[in-house]
Length: 226
Image (tube, rainbow, N blue to C red):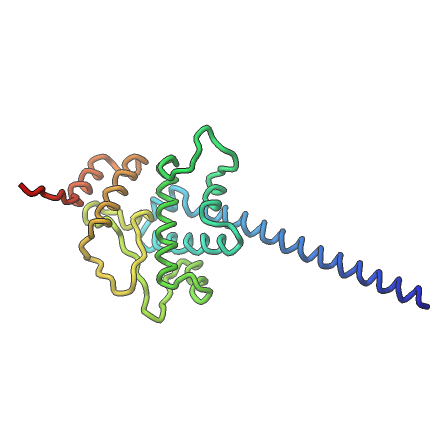
C-alpha cells in the first residue's frame, strides 16, 4: 500500500512538472508569436504607402498612434524599440557597415526610427501609454486624458506645401490646447529643416519644395558684437 502511494505521488509530481513545462512553453510561444505579429504590423504601418502617402490627415494621425501603440506593446513583450526596428528592417546580421550611429541608417529608416522614438516619448510624457489609454491608441484614436485630449500637429506648416499634413514624419504629439499656429522655437525650427532635407534625400519631396521649407524656417545667426 505504501509503495502504491509513493508511485501515485511520483506520478503526480511528474504530471505537475510536465504541465508546468507545457504552460511555460506555450507562454514563450505566444510571446514569440506576438513579437512576430508586431514586427509585421510595424513593417506594414511604416511602408511608403502608409507612412508617407496617406489619403488624408486623419489617416496619417491614425497610423502614428497605432504605431506608437505597437512600439509600446513590443516593449512590454521585452522587445525594446531599437531591437524592434532591427527586426522590421531585418538587421539580424551585421552588414558591412556597423549601424551603431543613427546617421548610418538609410534615410527612410532614419525617418521612421526618429519619428517613432519622439512620438513614443511624447506619448509617455503625456501619460498615453498606460493600459487605460492603449486600446484607443491601437485603434488609431487619441484618448482624452484627465488633463484633456492631446493633439497631433504638423511640424512643417502644410500651407507651405499642401499634403504635409498627410506625411507621418511631419506629425508630432503635443499637450492639449497647444496652439496649431504656434511659432516654432529654435529646436523645432532646426528639426523642420532637418526633416525637409531628409524628405528630399529620400526622394519623397521635390528639391523646390525643400527649398521653400528651408527658406521659411531660417535659423537665426547671432550677430557678433563689434
